[in-house]
Image (cartoon, rainbow, N blue to C red; front, side, top):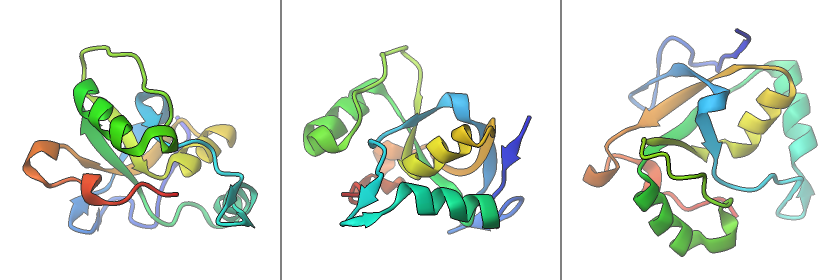
Length: 132
């Protein structure tokens, strides 16, 4: 196991416990952003992670396939094609899709996350706008 720990590893971020999850269990919800808002994005983030590690944990939402379908209707092409419906809860990267890709490219198998499990009761980041 090669884990990419955040500066909050072993503690909390925004009153949420930070845990390390297998990258293979995470679904990156947005496409890779080589450029963001007209500036090079992906490579500088990779260089920063290589030099300084992970600052913040990823934001993960545990969602059903049906919940993801609703989000896809809202965000359309800003979201990746949906994963197959396995009937299980899906660990959606809602904040950090590029960081999880970078971690995988750098050979990491696990990454620090905070997990929002109760999406139906409004305790998730669904209310956060999808990155543009």
